[in-house]
Length: 273
Image (cartoon, rainbow, N blue to C red; front, side, top):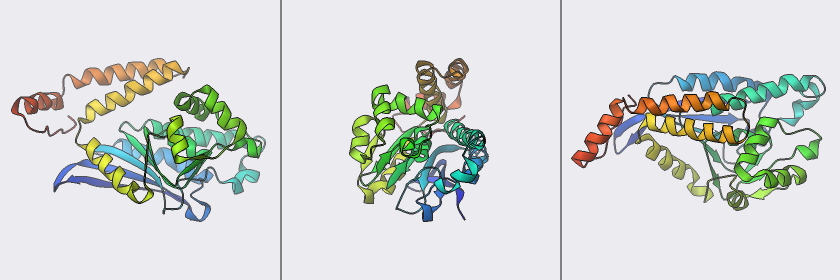
């Protein structure tokens, strides 16, 4: 049965715990991890649970198995769930899923292997970082189906690759290799397929050792800047949230620990407080 799977595990480096990280797995391997309507509807609750998890440092979004990240929304449901007036409800579920993913306060990494299409790209666009295997491929194919790519996903696509390139991808539905996606800025890193899991694990560990409040403030600040530049109606609220999170850093135990560790010439041990 297709479903969304969420697991929270400790981050352990050289036998020492550094908070926890979560993995959200798109689990529908028989259909190359296509997202069903029910899976979209499950995303907000999963993200809400993660957002209050104790000492969470990072989230990894991935597809089940090693054949695909996500082939997009499950087209087999479109006749019954996405034609005519039903499209409004379906699109709302997609949008709510993306918003919930983007609003996870800690860094979110999309671990991408194999095909990443349409709705899969939309999910990846709402992560903070996209790390792809060399065998990954990307396409935004609504023009092959006769539907419109949702506005929020289009806004984020244009913010990453630029409006001209976003139009080209939407006009042509062309398939990009991982290295082409890297050249366009659609992903941040490409690694050998056999090294992908280890590479992302090392990235999670590196993030986990940094000051959590600083990372949350950095994420909120960059998101606010991009939102303001791309006409997001929530841009002002995001700017205020970012300012509040930045101000909180200066009265935190972690700031005091960072200064103390620097003076003692040792690695800081941040607690997120």
